[in-house]
Length: 120
Image 1 (cartoon, one colour):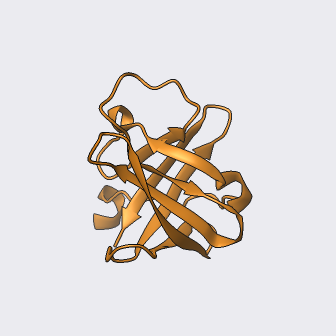
Image 2 (tube, helix red, strand yellow):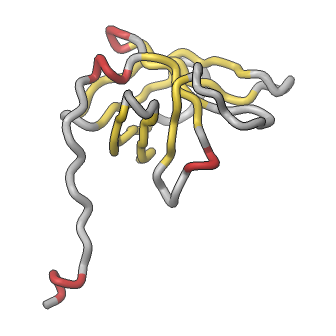
């Protein structure tokens, strides 16, 4: 009876890693709970004082974008490695930020939206 009342998360569909390549900026207006929504940097966002994000490149290249002191973006280099079909392990090589994992919830290239969950 308990199992009938508990909702379980469905496993995310496998995402071809090549489709994740590009620069993604957070669309915080669309975030919901622990789900973070990202859109390509070419997307027409509403006005904002800055947006964090990241760039996923081929061969494990990663760059994290944080808000710079001048409200622009400051990039920090890193690497990514696939963990199964729906997770990326992120290691930032600049600074002392601990590694983290991005769990890919969904990717819809037609709608220009990437949904992830950040895990420690």
